[in-house]
Length: 225
Length: 191
Image (cartoon, rainbow over all chains, first blue to last red; front, side, top):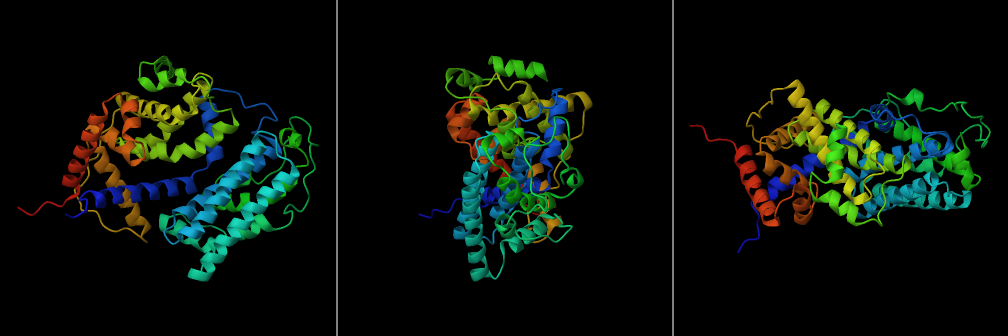
């Protein structure tokens, strides 16, 4: 008796198309703008300063969101084999752990460094596997997959791995919590509002290590604005 | 849309809200931090879900934004974190159906083409995406709702609770939907 399911092909096709749709939607969508639209539709005032949507904690969360989105794109790529995929998945999981701690204002500098180390270690492992077995970097995989999805990269950018690994990235280290209430911190968020998801991810990744290292104590996440 | 939220939260939509009330230990997403995570996690899947009900991309995106806005307003009233995906799908589809009833639109039918491999060709991939969505949208309403949840990985039991159906009916709808889909995507022999 054959185990062949005549509907298997159909299931596989629908799932494949759905996965592709989700990857494209995640990569292209501006989640920050979407959240702002939701707040407007809900007719709710902007959250008060220091509760997670403004300041350094919010910057870090946004940077993590964007990088996680890019890594999700890598996970969707068929060229990423299981072992490399598991490292990328682990890096993404730890990023969310970092995000939760930042949002809950319980992120100490040592913890941030430890979590970032885990992220960068896993990304480095994934990169090594991909290079050894396919001659491709993680960035190559992401770039090719985005191209398959019809999403263009407008600018070349440094690799995911180096973004997380490099020493504090901001030329002027963050000073926390010095801005007075109501003051705005110049960030790249505004200027990147129309960038593709990939661009935002790259910019976010580039800020990630710097933001995390800028957290001196748990309160800073909340008081950064 | 608020009245839908009230209805849903008050239990008119089905059993999920009842489940929420019966598990007071669970907590609603903390806002705004968890809300952003919920949005990032669910938004694209919701857009797909609403699109598979026949919505165009702009209609689906609009309905999903409405659903999340309703979620933001209802944040303190649904306590079980696990209830949010089902809740959001219900509210998003209602938002879409309401906009259709208010503004009206003609649903485009699919053209009956056979599916083709789209790997490596973004334009072809988008066409294939549109085709699969149009075929899903062409299913009878109940089959469509069951089937799209099935493809999202929901179990038979979860779908049964969400749509207030017997499990056997869920399985039957999945089988029928598969047969319908197969008939829809198989190219007709020239007569």
